[in-house]
Image (cartoon, rainbow over all chains, first blue to last red; front, side, top):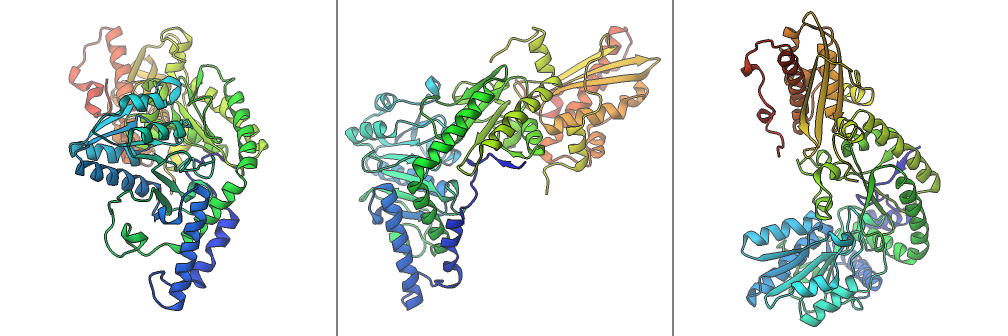
Length: 395
Length: 143
């Protein structure tokens, strides 16, 4: 049985999204910037797509900027707020310790330029509170940026509360919504979100396309210079087929959100209950507030890469935050940020579901994971030390 | 292209010589859990011949495969030959390792040397300390 349980990495495209793209390869293929009829047809489709996306997010069409994906949107949002802040001598940014690298590395770059970065602690409940944001805001804070739902452990942040705090303090608020858009209900106006990043391939749309919502009036800094596309804020001919696929996928996701979430949450909870039976393991992430599809565990005494490879051999595609899977020597910064020590963080497993998964697949996972964990533990000197009392259990 | 060679995958999914030798003549352990890989080698030695070898490994697929291959390469061999085993030879026998996984073969070489050193120490046999570089030499993660 083949089980795809890595939907936080990317999702299978929906037939609907593929079909929505096709006409824009060979029928409506004009350049939206061209004056002629084929160009204007493309332009019309582009603007229609923008309006449809805006409707899904609760904003105006002119507040949507199409980008190459979530990373570009994150970069542009943060750089823009930083540049705008610098004009007013505000160079302090608040974020969290478990952001995606698209955010963290951008913040690192700004730090080297002289910005001061506060990363909020996420050890309590593997989440942050709006109060933490409120306490961290200073006179010179130019941006609060925090992930909407964490990609590794699934924690859902109190976005509306944070938005209210930021609005009251007059600080721009950006959220990296890459894992959340299409999976949880979002209304950027009601939640006081000033900027929101999204990526199509996380909700069954195509790769290489995303968007940045920016509240009207907020000054964007260009990352890519050139033509006047995207109201002059993002040069480059629009990827119209991808945009059409993205918007079709988003509409589909928003339309079926309730039923999809009901199904995915049921599968997720079954998975959590089953995996929790494995001795000396711990679930990662906020147990109360979490994305419907993300399940993360640490298993003591084993290493994540070997776990993934053996699961792959059993037809299960999953992911891990171990050092070996990242190519670096340190395990995932997210797992370290929530307080997992290195030894335990190396033994992590992330399973991320979508509505395409079935209960049979969950049963297969629940048979395979305990088998593989026990196989690896039986050849692990760490596990032997734990069992013989040479080393103390952490989990 | 797959991440690992077929030989690596074979030794990873069907590791040879996994386990423990009770009353081993030499035991060596290298690496640490913080870095995500530990190898432990147990040796049974008779008349300078490694008559049995077992390993336990906590680590990634290539760490497990490297341990398996390295134990196969020294089993039944004289100590003098086991001392010649290099990480390069282990990696070559595995049909290559990705560059960022080469330290796994280094760990295997060091684990075996560490077990042999333990055998020498236990039996009061004189040896050249320079033949036993410590784990620092591999440049992998350290506390």
